[in-house]
Length: 88
Image (cartoon, rainbow, N blue to C red):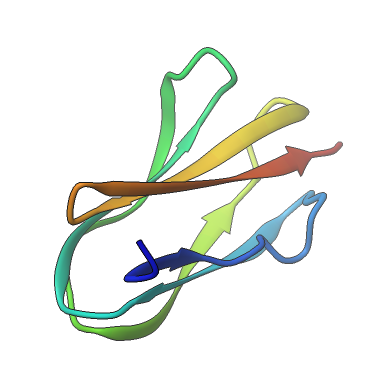
């Protein structure tokens, strides 16, 4: 649904910190996670109730192995995913 949007991670690729923008059409409980290609949660970027509107979570890439990861946003029974590459 258009009620949920996950913007591109910026910058991408990352070596340090990056911004992860997402937008909710209505107040929702949100789970925003960084997962590896095997689907394992590596970091939780945001969790809990958020009001409607635009939000930005911070992704700290320090300590992560170089490679491709997925940022997964889940809310209201819907999900969006974008890729992010960590470089060293």
